[in-house]
Structure formats: C-alpha cells, structure tokens
Image (cartoon, rainbow, N blue to C red; front, side, top):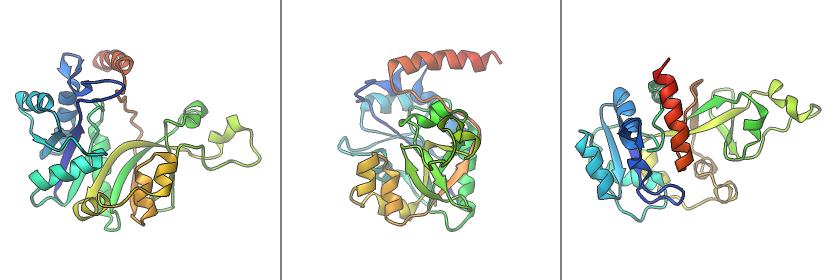
Length: 249
C-alpha cells in the first residue's frame, strides 16, 4: 500500500493571518510540520493557495502544489492537490499545517488502520485525562464500536453517565478526544468531496459527520501523544515554551 501526505496551508486566517509562516524555534511552522511528516511518508506535499507559502516550502527543499483559493475546506484542497501530484498512491494522509508537534507514531498509527480492508477513512483519538477537558466543546469526543470504528463525533459530552456525579464520569467511561488527523482511500476522497453538507455536520460544525451520515466507515487509531496546535498568536507563544521544554529533556 502506497501513502502520500498532503498538508493544507492557507495564508488567510481570521485569528492568525500568515500562521504557516510564523517562526517557531527559528523555523516557519509549516517547515516543522513538513519535516515531521516526511520522516514517515517520503511523498509529502504542502497544498496552498498562496505563493508566499509555496515559496517558503520550496526554499527549504520541500514540495508544494498551488491550489484554488475558493475551497471551502481542507479536504477539498487536498483532493485538488492529489489530482495534480498523486500517482499510484492508495491512501492520502491529511495533516493540518498548524500541528508542528505531530509525532511520527501518530502518523504510523493512522496508516496501520488501513491494514483492515473495511477502513475507508481513518482518524485518531486520545484518551481524555480530566473532566474539564471533556467538558470543552472545542475538544470533540468520539464514540467507537467494539472494532474501533467511529459511531459518532460530538462537541457535547457523550455518553451521559447515569447515576454518577458529573465530576466522576471519567472514572466510569473512557472518553476519547478526537485529534484532527485524517487519511482516506483515494476513491473515498474523490467521493466525499462531492457530498453536500449534512444536517449533523451543520448542527455540530464537524465535517466528519457528513461522512458518517453518508455511511462511510471511519477507523479510529489510538494515541497517547498530545499535540499542541496553533490557532492564535498566543498559541504560538505557548508552543515556543513547549518546544524549549521538549528540547531540554
């Protein structure tokens, strides 16, 4: 099975314009993401709609592809990029361009999901460590079946643990945090980008619910590694501190 990784990266961002080019530990954020991914998947590309990001990637020896500025989602951008640079690849791995601390083991776990022929899409989950995090609607929860396939994703705390105090729920159910890392079989990617928004997706503002609602099988790999995403300039400051911490270990 042959994998290709595509990292969508936009310059325009409401909360942090130019985020992929922000400097973290002496390197642009997008370079740190690219180098981590390329350790595992040699065929790695950045998909962007901005020449500044394209030029940055090629300047450090990476590979990039220009895409339309009109895409509504990273999945659509990845699909266009794959049409341009994909060859005999079987699976496309989607790593967000603001995840400079993604760990190689996470990418490997995602790829292993495709050892099961029933896996059409794969993503990652990490066990929650405290109820404060579980209660955060910005940390979507995953419910999985006995074989590790997703039953549902929600911003709400599901399931409801009946008969127990709320602060004790984590002691009685293994809540799983969704990490926004995906991989798709190529024929599945081509199909899901043509699907209209679904009612569940609109309600929760979670794109993966569109795929579930249309019957696609999403395998959930498990990781114990926490990532530090960057959404705001304040996140970048925290990332600098986190980088120094792990470099001094």
